[in-house]
Length: 352
Image (cartoon, rainbow, N blue to C red):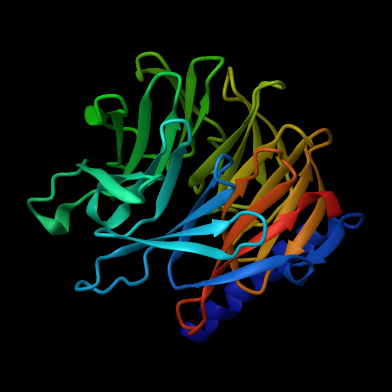
């Protein structure tokens, strides 16, 4: 039975690869060897770029063993990825969001259902806010994504639970405390439209949910592609100038382009299933990581067509962009069976 399953999976990946390659005949291909990289050890996840210090923060969870619950945050030199500092935390760090002006790095502690505030000047923990009830460890709701709305002093954290029972936690960043918990959403990823006073949430149910940035309350909720029940949206990037969002789906192929005001699906950009998605307004490009395909896509946002591909030796995960929009950073994860270090790529976009 296992052999049959593997054959089916292989044939599915092959078919998807053919579709993707046939749509990318004119895309230029690169490999990770064309760029700088830095090995970091196990458990590298999300990234945050600090322009003031010219550093890149990398959240890591070195071990999943019950007795090894410490986290480790790497501070890398943005210019060459040299390791400046290794900052230990009491809880394993997965997600990150940076408030550069207030010198606070927010760390999502997935397994503990909490968020830790790290002072980027002293590199010391300021506070840990417990979001999920941890009286029964087996019932902890895991914190996945952490997104900051600086304008309204709100931090949004998605709480992952089974059977569509996920929560959306809202933290007041001025008071540094939980102020609201929204239920029945199954939220996964977020993006903030500061000018429009909106927060866009994508869910594991294939929905686009719009929140009022001033109140954090839902304004609309749309099933983006109701004909496809297998959608599981992970992340969304915004192109507010064009009024569209780009959605990464871990279950189904293609990056989905949706109208932000209506949630209407207007286009599919052919690609393998994806994890992270990031929009670069300065270059009119979309960057997408495809873990299973071991690939990073560079998409022309003017044509919504593949522009370049970057082949990676392992599985690309999260993305961050430099403030001048000229450098893309990506965390790349190894297969759990491989005794190799996760690493970070520094991609010079001017060379693409």
